[in-house]
Image (cartoon, rainbow over all chains, first blue to last red):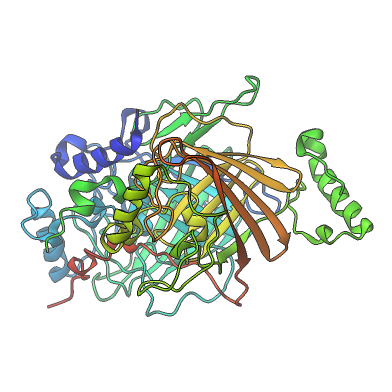
Length: 292
Length: 260
C-alpha cells in the first residue's frame, strides 16, 4: 500500500545487502556502455524563458552508487583519468579504502554511510541512486531526488559566503545550446561519491555539465572535480541518464513513477512520483543508529 | 470583476487569453489587474514567502510562554477537539519540547509548512505548483492538471494535493495524511483522516491570503478554519539555503578526512 515504508526498507537493504548482490540498476535501465551526448546546439522544445525544455523523470543507466569505479558489468563513472580510478593522493586513498572496508560492518558511527541516514547525496551521487525528476521555471532548474532536493538558480548572482556549507552546495547555472553548465559552491563534501568511500574536500571546485540529446531520450552528466588537497590531478565523472516515460516499466528503483488517474479518461497519460521523504521513515538508520 | 476560467479556452489560445484578461482588468482600473500572472492567465504565486502571523507558536490565542511570544491566534476560535482529544492535546503541549516532530526536522505537513517561521519558495507551472520549504528542503506538489487523488489510504507527510482555480483563487483538496505531523508547536494534532481544503489568493503582488479548513471526524467535533497572510520576501539577493536539519545529530561523525 505504502511506498514510504518501501523507501525506508530500500535504504535498509542498500546498507545491508552485500555489494555484489546489488551492483548495477534494474534490468530495464542497465546499460554496459556510456551513452555519450556531446555539447552542441538545441533544436528541441523550449520554455517561455528560452530554456531547453528537459523536464520530466530520469534515471541513470550504468550501475549505481555501489560501483563508482566500475565492475565487470558497469564501466567506471570516472572517465578521466582514462584508467577509471580516482586520482587520490595516497593518504586519501587509504581513507577511502578504510571506509569501504567497514561499510558492511560499521563499528563506529562514521562508518555508517551518511546516505543511509537519509543525508542528501551530494551533487554527483544523487544521480546514481533512484530515478529523479527535473522541473524548470524562469530562472531555475529544480532537481527532486528521493534523498534531497537541489535547486539550481540560473545566472551569475554571487553564491553564499564560503562559511555556509550544505550537502548539495549552492549552485549557479547557465545554458549553452543543449548543455546546462553548473558551478557548485559551498558543498560540505560530507556525501561520499560512492558507497566505496570516495571523497573530495570542501575546497574542491566542481564544474558540472548536463548535455541533453536531441529527441530528449538521454542526457550525459559530467562533473570535473579539481581538488589539490585530495587529488593528484583533476577528475571527471560521467553519469549517463535516460528519460522515464509513461511506457517505461516501473521497477521500484530506477523508475519509481506511477500512472496518474484523471476523471476525464481521454486525458493524455501521465506519471508522478509519490511524496519524497526519507528520514521520517528511516528509523533503523536515520533516527536510531546515532549513539548518545 | 471579470473572471475567466482557464478551461474556457482551447490550449493554443490560453496565452492570448491571459494577456487579454490582464489588459481587460487594467482597463477596468481594478487593483486586481496588477496581480502578477502566468502566461496562461492564472495569478502567479512564484516567489519566496513567509508569514509574520506567529501561527506556529499556537493556532489558538495564547499568552506568553518561555518558548513562544503571546499571540491572538489564527484559528476561527478554540479548536473543536473531541473530549479525548483535548486530553491528548494537553499531553502534547506538556511534552512539546520532546515530541514536536518539527524538532526532529521531519516534514512539517499541511497546513503547518505554510506558516512555519522559515521561508518557502513557490514554483509554478500550468500543471502544478511546487512548494519548496527551506526547513528540511522538502518539496510539496500541488497538482493543477485535473488529476485525481491516488487510491488511499497512503500516509503522506504533506498529504496528497489536487487543486483547481476558482477565478483567481487556488482551491486545494488535501487528503491521505500520516498522523505523525502536528499543526503547530503547541501540540495541536490530527489523525490520518484529516481533510484539508486550502484557499490561496493574492491580495496584491506581495501578499498571499491563505485559508485552510480542517475536517477530521476522529479528532474534531466539526470543521474549523485558520487564516494567515504570507509576505513576499524582497530583500535583495535573498535565497533559500538548503536546511538539511535532520542531519545535525550525526553531522559531527562526518568530518571530511584530512591529510595526516
